[in-house]
Image (cartoon, helix red, strand yellow):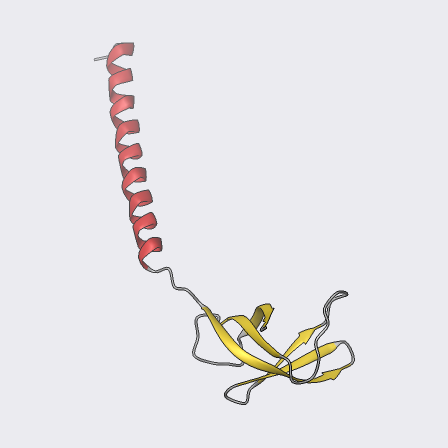
Amino acid sequence: MERTPKERSKKMSKGAKFILEILLIVSVFVMINTGLTFVDNTIVRECEVECFEDNVVYFRDEQGNIWGWELGKNEGYHLGQKVSLLMNTNNTKELKDDFILKIKVDK
């Protein structure tokens, strides 16, 4: 028994509709899951300019950790200057993988 083109069209559209529904459900699940697991992995560290070596300035934070930053053309710091470091923690508790995102000079 052969189906008419109209019957084949209905069958295909039901299959396509099912696939679209599954894709929609998966997409919504992924969006919700991503939204619930977003973690802010930044921290601000209050620091002081410790020293300079070659083209790198080193900062000491309040816990005594030293952080280095390669100086750009228009960046100028002086010894003892207070700065705030916006840092990425890489979403870990380890300090050794943290890195500086931005430096703000305290006034």
